[in-house]
Amino acid sequence: MTSARLKLPRRPRDSFAALQLRRIATGFGWAVFGLGGLLLSLTWFRWLCWSEPDAQRRMMRARRTIGASFRLYLRLLRRLRVLDLDTSELRALPRSRGAVIVSNHPTLLDYVFIASEMPETDCIVKEALAHNFFLKGVVCAAGYLYNSEDPERLLQECEERLRAGGTVLVFPEGTRTRPGAVMKFRRGAAQIALRSGGLIQAINIQCSESWLAKGEPWYRIPSSRPVIRLVPAGTIDPRRCWDGSPDSIPAAARALTLEIARRLS
Image: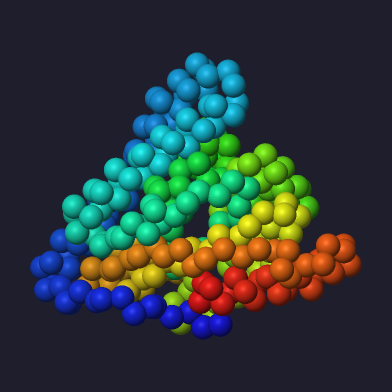
């Protein structure tokens, strides 16, 4: 399926001066993001690891802190007029235990958008973030799953967390969408849902402009301020595609992936 920006109201083109101010504000926003992550790693999360002996409570407190930090950060971006963002529909979405959250991935900040409203959701992150100077403390304290080279191990870890009542966020494309490229969905999210028996909750991130997409540097900003909206795209019950036999899992995963792609494209 072809990636396309959905029809959101586009803001008028900025003047040259306004465009440069927005570019400076975007750079400032990135600096705040990196330094904020480093500050939290060196202070609050370090203290939390020392003071909270229970690993589950420590992880949940860390994730709630991350969610609150993201909400504050997105408020700053709106005040700086870097973007227009609407997450009200996601905020009103009932929380489902043991659900796989799937979303399209048009921008670099998609996880920030989702976690600001669903802070307790688990996330699969690149293993390189465990060594990132600015973010490794945040990722470690939150107990996120690493996208390791062993897919079977990752599937098992996701299944365990979902069966324990957690939720896991998966971007089925595996990476950000390239502007104008065909959206290719992997079967990982479907496999996780089939193995855990949990529902799939789809979230469609609508973007009026190409912004922070794959291959685009932060300073390449659109001529008008991007409008972004997060819209729930319904739930999918994996049992509708699977008869319960192990031999039918590959076919069920293909059918589920097609349904996910339909809702997110």
